[in-house]
Amino acid sequence: NAARLDDGAYAEYILAKGDTQMHIPDGVTFEEAATLGVGITTVGQALYQSLGLRLPGEQQSASASAEEKTPVLIYGGSTATGTLAIQFAKLSGYKVVTTCSPRNFDLVRSLGADAVFDYNDPNCAAEIRKFTADKLFYVLDCISTQSAGTICANAIGPAGGKYSCLLSPSPDLSRDDVENLCTIAYTAIGESFSMLRRTFPAAPEDYEFQKRFFALAEDLLREGKFKVHPLRVEGAGLKGVLDGMQLMREDKVSGQKLVYRVAETPK
Image 1 (cartoon, rainbow, N blue to C red):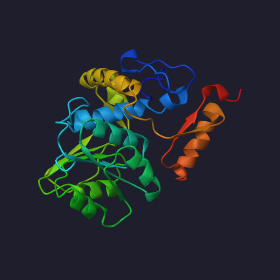
Image 2: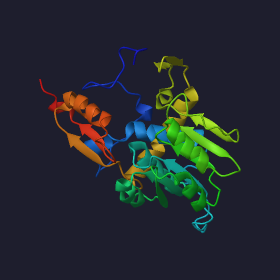
Image 3: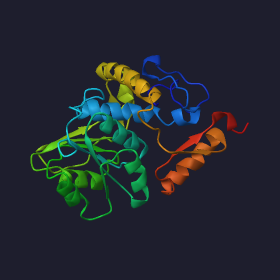
């Protein structure tokens, strides 16, 4: 954190705000729990603050058929945020449409996706519009590149909609009838911070929301209502993180979260 040199997470011990932490329930390992923090924060912000979806427990009538449920597109469903977003959207009672590579189709389906499409298919957006009968309104883009934004914009129905991405500035959607939104997880701390050559003001309302959302997520995790992202434990502790970042640059990590044990850092 360039604005606060005493802050950061590349260390054995860190400071954190207790109100936005979760207890690790029985049956969840430390390695599994390590995959959740940023993802839970982002899902809370993007699905419920940004897009304004119903929270789990506020879902529509259980008698509503799959055809009647409102569709939500989770673009990039096999990412660490995407797998959580799929599950939370399902817990909120929505019909979940997602995209990923064919090698991860089984993964996203196992988490509850009602339909999955290959983002490399030139007809991806058209197929989504067909599946949703031109009624897609809500989109969470977990990739947030210009090409991803274009597919998302083309998948939204003619009535317009809401699009939320995870990077700033957001992609150009070239649609005036689509609300172009952006969420950055760091605002959840409720303090100002510097990122991307910008200074973001404190957002105390985001912090207050996350306090409530983390309490909800902790209950859902304890009840086994959602699963953590698939993970792969790598060696060499903090030193190994650098190797992991290189693997990601080389596009050698897909559908998995790399986890490192600090205690294994070479002396």
